[in-house]
Image 1 (cartoon, rainbow, N blue to C red):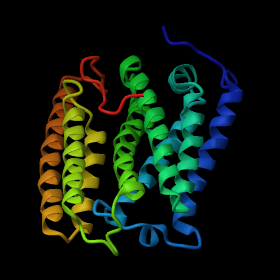
Image 2: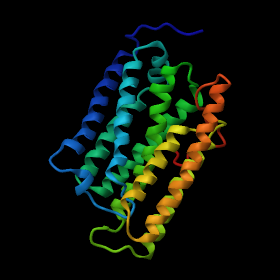
Image 3: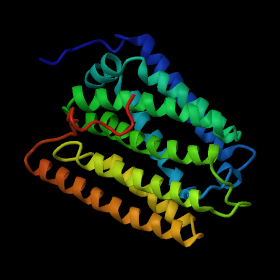
Length: 274
């Protein structure tokens, strides 16, 4: 039986969620509206994507704004306040720290916080997918969709930041053999992650697969030289689209059966675990 709680239940956490959401939003706005254009002045590596890859942040922000509003309703309160609980503000704070470190070019510290952000997102992702099947369209749009995109995108950020912290500067250093090997392995890992999302349940996780594919195509668009990295990125971007199509077919079939949502099988957990 659905509960009928007051909007004031868990009010402290709801207020904190609102505050940290704008902290999270502000940290990302700074990277765009700040004194330097970070997407063009940051370290250029051999896996750096085209700047339009980062537009995915705008969609995540928009969806999470819906999450913040939805927490004041019964359905949202049960998942966001009772289920996710304090993990959401923790994630927002970690993400804000990560973005500011990254924007200031402290790449090693940013990489450490990218791992923290990925761990926090993975924990929330698992809770949402495993224990909170969507009961409405609002559940889909404001809980499952944003955290699926967020999880896929932070997987990409871990790879990008690792290359910024420890990889060659493409502006001044030619790609050596090991750079090409690690770039190839990075593309393979991202494509394999997209496949894991596609097979995470009968219908797969379409938004997370799209986040990975989007990023691989952006890397292909940016990386023109050397040819090995350019064409490797294309090959894995094409493969990732196969998993997007697989997940899209799964979602379509589930919708035809009248079902909704994405569950997570225990045997098929995310590649980056908490």
